[in-house]
Length: 274
Ligand code: PMM
Image (cartoon, rainbow, N blue to C red; front, side, top):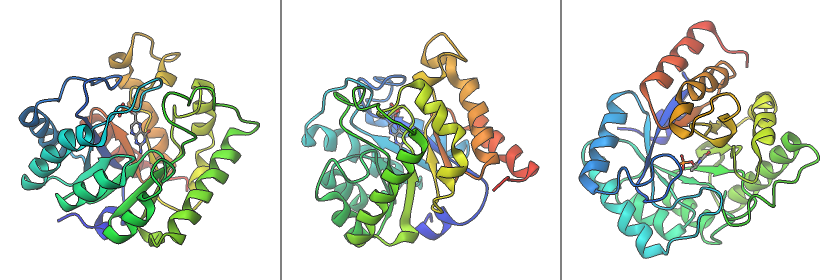
């Protein structure tokens, strides 16, 4: 059984498989909206070596409009339960305390909150009471406004400062530091160049001292190195995993799993720089 202790124990960079049960996510939207098909896909990701399957019911792509809580629950809960019944470790990708709580009750072991507790004032306290692992991502506002919030003097230093503020808020709310994971939020309130700057700043982000999850898979920042749309970005996504694993990332969140597991294993063999 996957517990916080096994999940966060030192080891090779984990792969978190993406399972968006949304009609409109930027690269896999609409592919997994049927519960059975979604569960089968999640089981396949786990069989390929995903340490977690991350189930999301609300698209966070730039410009996306929000769904209501009932819609999000209806999309996510049957898939969380179905995967849990099949022995797959699940994280739930949500900004809502209610969805986090119901998903953990249905078996999820991680709450992955792209807003780092900023979108829902109940989130941090709810997670503290649930006792699960919490991923706090760097975030400056909902999808509708995040492009205009991409203003930085020093993107790496500001992301580090803003993540540290989320750590303080999480700890004040009662989340134990050894259940916290951070994520610098590539593509969230960051243009492509700023996202590359954050990747180059990997040592500063990892220097915070908490496990770090990174999500570069198929994102628009890869277009300059892999033009042709989201599905043409998988090889570049794997290259980034090798870079991040070499630098001691805790995990990468990816659409394909097997090649990222291989990249992580290669980095492990070569030895880490941190
Ligand atoms: N990116 C997306 C959604 N959820 N969660 C974390 N922790 N980090 C990310 O970078 C992240 C996320 C958007 O990408 P998707 O539409 O491919 O899921």
